[in-house]
Image (cartoon, rainbow, N blue to C red):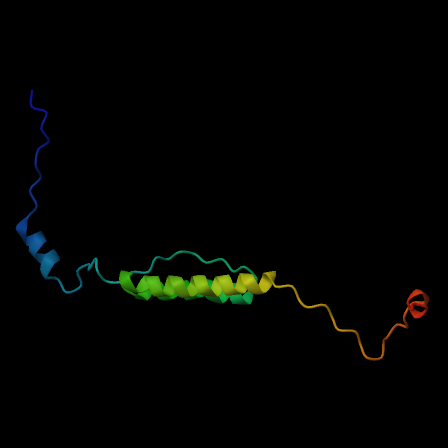
Length: 106
């Protein structure tokens, strides 16, 4: 019994056409990843996520710059969300009189 798999012969014309055709697939050319990006509702974050689409048009070695830029932008957006606003300054027309306990100090 012969357990070997029979070899399939590929016609040479098919190979030649695939290699010589100008519209042949070029694995080195940029190809869109088509990753869906769902809006978050935060305009700054959404803009950074849309920036990821720029990597679709670059060769792989250009992706790092886009990813680092997006990472920096997302980090800045999150830092801004975490920043606590300073307490409001008292209005000049609203001033409390010192309490009586402080007025009698010596």
